[in-house]
Length: 206
Image 1 (tube, one colour):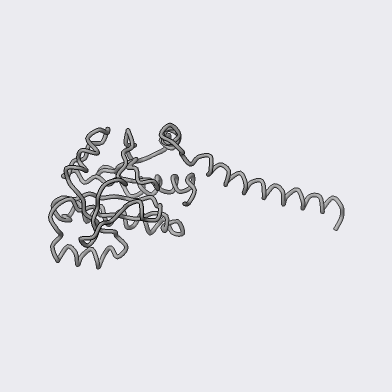
Image 2 (spheres, rainbow, N blue to C red):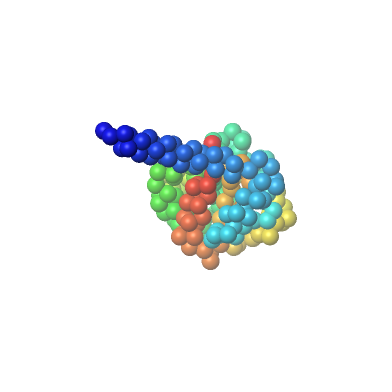
């Protein structure tokens, strides 16, 4: 190998190393450390988002949840982006439609699907046996938890997206457990998919 080819090979190697390092450094710098940084990140991401940015973001991680009549703590779960669908009157057609769309979006994330979890938050009476059987059959990896309806409504009342239990809103929670975006029946699966791909690209895996 000539000296020029050797130098060219070394240059290409260092260029690759620099590019990889830049990606990691950018991911670290973009990870919000406080409310100001998080607002700045939202403003950056908000230039191309399809869903509605929730302002201000509100923490859902501190709420009391249950799963199978046992306490379920958000903080004890692995940090992930979570699609949260609150319901109060069972899982009707609108609920099932949203679950189907979110499931297809989750599948299309392919190798990054492990960084996202779908959560059904029941804020009403316990689900009937038919609905439970449907969820176990059609949505195997769906997390089912329950919580307090009034507390959840109060949490969203201070934002630009107050929760309407009949509207069928699907909320996106970041890896820290803050609700930051929501989708309605006006949004399509492609909107949700585009946002998630964008967020997963620019946020480091924890």
